[in-house]
Length: 277
Ligand SMILES: C[S@@+](CC[C@H](N)C(=O)[O-])C[C@H]1O[C@@H](n2cnc3c(N)ncnc32)[C@H](O)[C@@H]1O
Image (cartoon, rainbow, N blue to C red; front, side, top):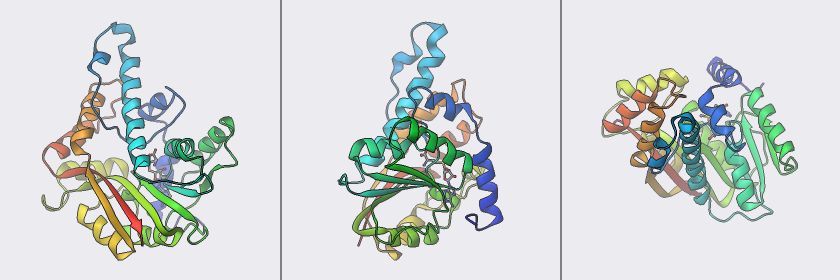
């Protein structure tokens, strides 16, 4: 029984059904499928040029910014030896897992509570000829059953807002070797704003998630032997992606909530990296 609650059942059902063009069409650009947002400046030339091919240029540009986000996460994992193992907690269709394997040549375990995501990512691993080294598991990241201390790095790419942070970091701390690295990229609400704003609450309702406060991340990490080494505010870097997405053919209707929340200061897009001590 990998689903520990009716809530987790509803999250699993959401991801099992999910076939959103904003994920599938972008992944089709080069066969790497992300379920996260982009960072970096938009190349304005994608909006110029022939009208007939403009949509495809915008899709490719959004995909480039989402890949840049995963590249930045991987940059913060430190050096991982080829013989090492890393864990992609809440791996989606496996995009960041494959990129980490390409970077380090290490073993990768990706876990998700969605059966259809495990099937999709496993098929990708076979097609890429890396199925021995990049494995996907139908497993709850709060209770993996994986070997204690076996991982040089663990990350959550936009998947912490589905779980209780103390439960999550207790399990990550158990799995990481001493000196190992933990990285998350996540949206969080800004403690100085107060409690979640209306726009943040709209995001929670749309994705059946519960965005945590910035301070909760740092408090919970420290309580679980994960000592932050860097906190990078990516809020300004993600706004161009959302502006482009809002005008694109694959907009889902949540774009205004993200833009409002980032602009009114109630929501922040952060990378947090920590060492397991
Ligand atoms: C927004 S997607 C991010 C996917 C991926 N990290 C990426 O960047 O493309 C959230 C992911 O978290 C997973 N997830 C949510 N709760 C989980 C849990 N308790 N255990 C494992 N995975 C979980 C979902 O199944 C989904 O794959």
